[in-house]
Amino acid sequence: MRTVTLLIASLILSGSFAVPARADDKPAEKNEKTEAKTIRALLVCGGCCHDYLKQKDIISKGLAERANVVVTVAYDPDHGTKHLNPVYENQDWYKDFDVIIHDECSADVKDTAMIDRILKPHKEGLPAVVLHCGMHCYRSDPYPKTTAWMEFTGLNTNHHGAQLPIEVTYTDKESPITKGMEDWTTIKEELYHQEELLPTAKALATGKQKETDTVIWTNLYNDKTKVFATTLGHNNETVADPRYLDLVTRGLLWATGHLTDDGKPAPGYEAKK
Image (tube, one colour):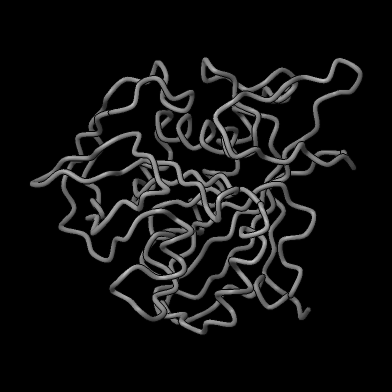
């Protein structure tokens, strides 16, 4: 693998592997004979239209403050839609990570072999978190119909309106991801419009501007892989909002199997003091 732009957001001295995710909503069971292990997350970001230079640090810091997570950042400074994040040039780009956070914006990367390389570990069970423009990536055939990438995210979406405040309403208040969270209204933001929420996905919240669309959901990909997704998060102020960071943290903990029924990190997976 040639040199890539890989920034280490934080380091935790642990050689352990996190418990694999399960394709259900059950919280992780604590093994009293072993200590909880740090969740190793890879944040893939960069591309068009967003301040990823700052957002990578906001997300990395926000997750570490809320859970036992160490984030490695693969940041691509290219500002176009056609550039592949260099991290994917390595066949084994996903190795040594327990969850991948897809926050890239690469709509015009359409090489099916490369898309298959990106999807391969997720097809095999590697959990994922997909944020905002991650939903508008990898528009291979049969776009604008549901693509292979959309099957992974759980939502067919290919456009958004003008930036206006979004009224976020939690429609599933019993999910451990949303339990106890209050509805809120964002600053001026992009509302991604849904063509279809796939049968494998479960909506958790809607967002309303002039129309109402699903903005937070979970997906069960390839019958086994847990994916948490939200289309919220265009502007830095929204990404830095504690309500947003709480949501993403819970989604990550759910995807990796370390979220309790009451929406808290499983024992041992709380933030490091």
